[in-house]
Image (cartoon, rainbow, N blue to C red; front, side, top):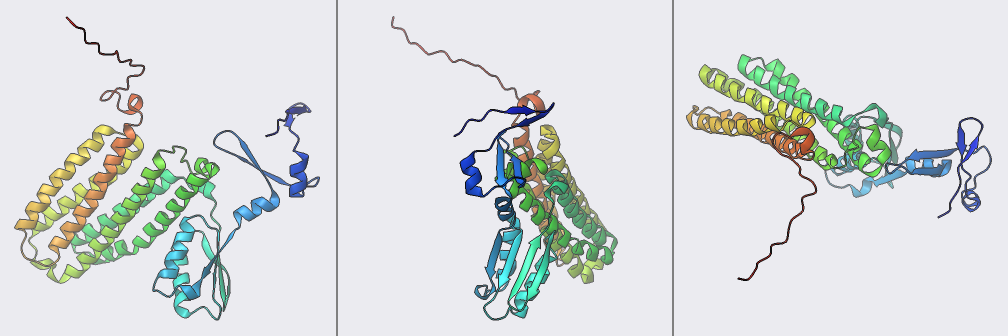
Length: 357
């Protein structure tokens, strides 16, 4: 470790000299550009241009010939994207097969910022051009929750009103949910590694990062369950007229309860409202009782139980998010739940002495 004094140049500029040995090792010359990155602990990271460029543009090479299982190449690209890799090259010793090309083109449509930069018979170069400063993770969480909620809402509206074009629109929204999910997880993992990115995306609370990953995963599952529900609604179209309207109303009411649990649980994550989160968990119990009763009493018409099962799965994920909200509120009792839980500091325990008579 070397110690350097800060010197004042002019009226407001502060400078510090760089170690000569380091300058020689890095080949730095006058007027060269250096990159200065603030770290979370208050330190500064100084990098020469060639190091910064290498760090930003490492090329990740995928051997397409070894991806001999269906969907394998597609999943590797998704995993590389989520891990924050900006440059991905798919190669082959002979020629990239049509199936692999189709996989690449299909998955590129689902990954925000990723595009095909170059394509030859033996190589496909993908590059991600995301500017992380344009996204905030709380916004992406809310956006994903809104998409999942909309899929559920449109599927159930189509079920109730027999408007199946709305149901088809709901199914089409699931691709958008995947896009937001992959982007959010990418930014979240980058925030864990690079403090500067954590500040840019608004994820400075280190304790919340693992919870945010779970929330994103649950919301992506909710979108999947909602899409499955929409497909079930389409499948049961031929049986819909056989379903009594009172049963339709009861199923729709359960979907409204499910929506409430999902939407308010996300709000509780940010408001840290312990009481509302607790009410949602109690609401989940009521929904479970009503759903089980309806399961027993509903007529033997195909797909009813599948719809109830989808609603139950969605409510479960919403309830789990509410539990995370409670845990988050308890991180700072004095601020969020001071009327319920109090943190007492500087409590000294006295030793227990047993005297003899």
